[in-house]
Every structure is written in C-alpha cells, then in structure tokens.
Amino acid sequence: MVQPLDTLIETPSQTAGPYVHIGCIPTFAGLPGVYPQDLGLSPIAPGAKGQIITITGAVIDGTGWALRDAMMESWQPDAAGLFAGQEGADPAVSGFCRFAADKDSGLFALTTVKPGPVPQRGGAMQAPHISLWVVARGINIGLSTRIYFEDEDNSTDPLLARIEQRPRVDTLIAKKTGEGQYRFDIRLQGDHETVFLDI
Amino acid sequence: MKDMTDNGPLIPRQRDMHPVPYDPDYKTSVPRSPKWPLLSMESTPSEETGPRFGNSLLGPLDNNLILNFSKDGSPAIGERILMHGRVLDENARPVPHTLVEIWQANAGGRYRHVKDNYLAPLDPNFGGCGRTITDAEGRYQFLTIRPGAYPWPNRANDWRPMHIHISVFGHSFGQRLITQMYFEGDPLIDRCPIAATIKNRSQLDRLVAPLDMARARPLDFLAYKFDIVLRGRRQTMFENRLEGM
Ligand SMILES: [Fe+3]
Image (tube, rainbow over all chains, first blue to last red; front, side, top):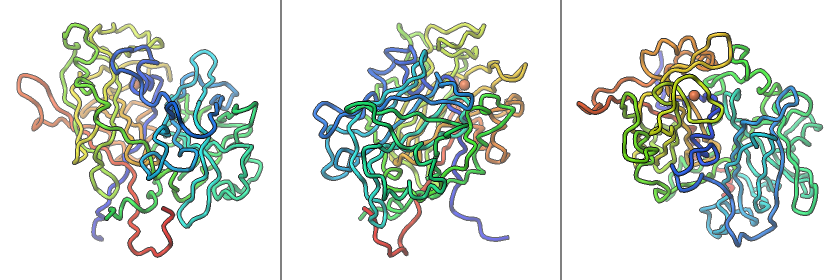
C-alpha cells in the first residue's frame, strides 16, 4: 500500500442528449420566459473593434448527414488577442457564444469579430483561432476543436504543426467564401474527419 | 499574489475515467464518434481562460424548477427534492462563482420539447430548466421535482433511469463538462446503455446521488447530494520556464 493521493478524479461526462437545448438555450427550445434571454447569444456587443465575420457550417456524422440537434460553444479573444477579463481587453467582446444547428437544415452560423493571435506558454505565437466545443446526442464527451482561417498565416502555429498527417490540417481551417464570410464544417467521422483535441 | 494552482496548464484528462466515445449499445454514438485519435497537447490560454458569469445573470427563481415555469405560482407536480452539492477541481479546491445549469424531464418522464411525444402528459407548471452560480465555497443547490424514467428509441425496450442533466463551466474553457446525475437505488441505472458507456464502475458510481436526509426538510422535500469535480491545473512552483502570460 502507498499513501492516498490528495487529488480527485474528474467527474465522468455523459452525453448532452437530444434535449440539451432545454437547459442551455431554453428560448430557442421553445421555453420562452424562463430567463430574459438565452446565454451567449453573441460573443460581441455593438462597437467591437476589428473585422466582423460570419462562419457558417454544419456538424456532419459518419454517414454524411448534418446533425440537427448539435449544440456548440465558442470561446475566443478580441481582435488584439486579449480574452475578456484580461487587462486592456475590448469591453465589447465577451468572446463566448452558444449556438445550435438549425433544426431543419443542420446549418449553424457564428457572427463574431476575427480574433487576434495569442501567445502560448513559453512565448510561441498561436495563429488566430476560435475554440469550439460540440455536444449532441450520441457524443459521450464534448468534442473540442479549433477554427483557424485560410487567409491568416498558419505556418508557424504550434498546434497545427503537431498534426502529423498533414492532409488533416485542412480540417481545422475555415474557407473564405466572401468578404467576412467563412465556411467551417465539422466532420465527426469518415472522410476528412475533423481533428479533435485533447487539450 | 495569484494563486499558483491557477497558473499552470490544465491537468490532462484521464480519458479512461470518462465514457467511451464509441459504444454499439448506444446506437447514436456509432456514427457520431470520431475514429481517429485526439490530438493531445498542453493547454494554452485558449483553454485556460473561459467565460465568467456574475450573479446579476440570475433571477430569483432560476434555481427553483418547482416554480420557475409556473404562471400563477402553482407548484410543479412530483416528488419535491433538493439537489445540492459542491463543484471542486482535481486539486480538491472549491470552484467558486461558476455557472451550473440543469435540465430534466417532468415527474412523468416527459420533456417540454417538440421532439418528445411520450405518452406521459406535460405539466403546465413545469418547464424543466434551471441555473445557479456556485458560492465562494463552490456550493450550489436546486429545488426541483424528481424526474420520471422514460423510454427511448435505442434497443427495443430501453428506458432511461431517473436523471438530471448538468452543465458546468469552471473557470477555463477546457474544464467544460456536461454530465448526468442519477438517483440512489434506481434499478434502471444498471440497464442503461448510456450509463454503461462509462466502463469504470467506480466512476459511474460517482454519478449516483445519495439520499441526504441531513439536508431533507421535514414535511417539505427530500435531498440528494451531487458533488462535481472539474479538471484542475498543475502547480507550477518548481518550473522555471517563462510563463506565457
Ligand atoms: Fe434525459
């Protein structure tokens, strides 16, 4: 026998299930009035500095079908690379957004400010990216990934550099479809499966 | 002085303490589980920071599901229960001032949702969602009714045990967790393919809330205790590498 550790083990995850919207975005789920408004409707307020962009996409399963019941959360810094609460951060950028796949088309849209680069521990610079967390029925533990941008310099990003199979890097890069418009699909499985993170 | 345990990277997740992503007995997980390994990396500020929510967010009935959907003050139908506990991190420290959200079926096992057409009736006074923010010691509580078990389309006769869904933020986006609380003594837990996605029995047991008579209120409600542990951050006091921020 040895001494017991003083540390605890993380509580295990369980699927968010088909009714996650009731708990997280009740107005969207058809329960208006419980809260004044759903949490995280937008990551920005009027006056946010930087380029306003919209990222559209879908969460696609192994059969090629777009999930109608996925919910996502995004987290990002402001245009200068500062997170809400850090000194000098843009007060109009909360950085957090909650959004869901459309119940008919499966499409989601995130309108936000394009994030700035963020240094990581040790000083290396990360290319601009938005952190994304995906939950749904059938997903037993929330999936983490990142949205990078095709029109930014991603060549020295430390995370992208860690992807050994280089064709997979592309799964994390939003494609520009117009001025301020991007497309980013999340493929849970199958051809071009998105790189998910254990981070 | 900043607390040192708030400076280090997040402790890597012990994935074997979590459910398996792919489990044929939970059929929807089959097409929705990634097949490639996850990309493992030390956390960065993108995962170590996270949204914060203040108490100004909360309305007075947000953590009272018995009354928060009632139009005329009539209580929701069902067994009245207090669900309470603490949010801690892996270093066994409380996680104060963090948002906890719950959602659940009504006493008959029916959700207030367009896609739920189970035979059990809706309760006009029950919505099924609540939220609160932990106090300085990481404590939270909800007053609600005990949800009913319900059937679901999976194998021919699968039923979910009574459960409450819980979402917790912590202080870092990398701590984000959604899980479910089950109830002590429910025989459906051991028959549930979703509960069974957790292969480590002692980890599954941690999702089963014990009856807590010390917090039950005579002639009013029973109580169930449910503590939640989020990822912690590694202490960095002997590391001399330059901190990124
Ligand atoms: Fe449920």
